[in-house]
Image 1 (cartoon, one colour):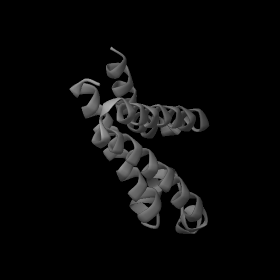
Image 2 (image 1 turned 120 degrees about the vertical axis):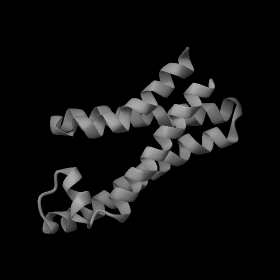
Image 3 (image 1 turned 135 degrees about the vertical axis):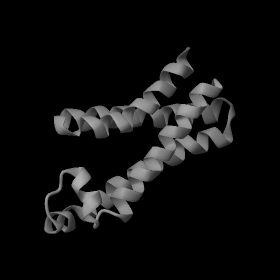
Image 4 (image 1 turned 180 degrees about the horizontal axis):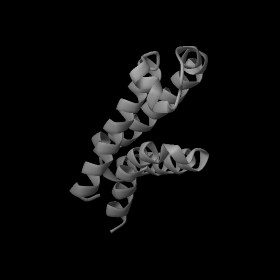
Length: 121
């Protein structure tokens, strides 16, 4: 995998670590839950169990992307690129679910998509 692709894998991994923190650790804060189109603390409290679960999915994707870079070689590359593919697919699902989430879907999906394209070249 090229250095450029590795950089975008790393960016995607770090972004998903941030998303994990927002969903699993910080979802109770108004400045965070508003980013997810939640309109009240009561609603944030209601969706918290789901958000925590979703956050851990993002943590595992981040660990796959970053761990694959650390392991290196063909196996590490395969794990990193699989994680990136899952990130792109999740971004597409997010956008398909709610068009208002275009910015969030782009943040989630563009860096891993770039990594996949660069790795394919």
